Length: 314
Image 1 (cartoon, rainbow, N blue to C red):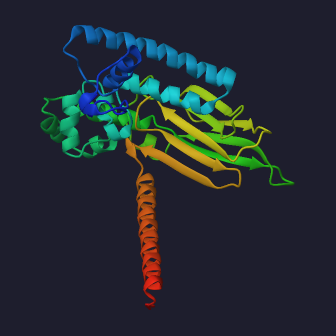
Image 2 (image 1 turned 120 degrees about the vertical axis):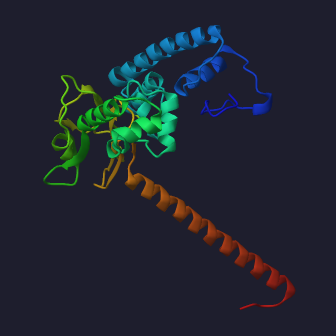
Image 3 (image 1 turned 90 degrees about the vertical axis):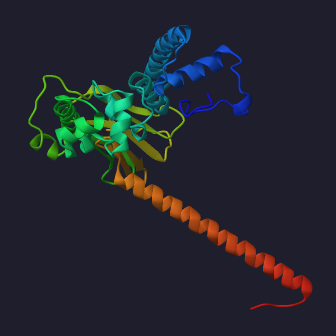
């Protein structure tokens, strides 16, 4: 609990923290699984396995209930993401994605990350010899790694979505979602497999508190499209998520009732440059606002001080 393995800390001072009940223990063990921590104690390893199995069944049940009964699309999405994290031992693409390839362990992943190889595209950009030298592995490790990365990139899908409006008014009538293969997905890849390496789950829901889930389709691997009617209950936004069985290929679109659109994606295993740019712009805006507020505060203090002393400054 005191290390970086546990991403979400329990309340209390870390230096004096002790596990008090079973729920806290399960909370920590589940994060240790995702953080790829190996306990030396055999009893803890067995408990970790039991907790994982129980958590997976609970999350699956919660996901099904959210889709079929309560219609809470966001809950279904969170259940999917946590199940994926437990299965793949990854929180997100920021944690690295290469350990999802068979034969690449935690140590090898760290060596590759140290040399800037963090995404599937990074693997394709390096030679087989470089990958073997950096990873400390023998042939045909480099070739196998590049083949696996090619298969992942070839099988990815791209998301697009839009709101249809009635001809006579600006009233939203339906949601149209399309999944397509990228233009370079088939031309650059030569190897073919019988089964897809990535399966996708499509989730769409509104920000309405009731009946928000519009689409939940899992096991998608080929280009397709969906059209659903929009609810009559009030809402402002529609969230559309394309979630991959492999971390690094998720995409999302936020549609506003007014017609505005916001796109976010993870490209080839790392967050998109557009997302990073948006984050940088937000941080810069926050810094400018903070500086502006500080200047206003200093001006008000100077004015108040001048007023008390009977002087005026220009």
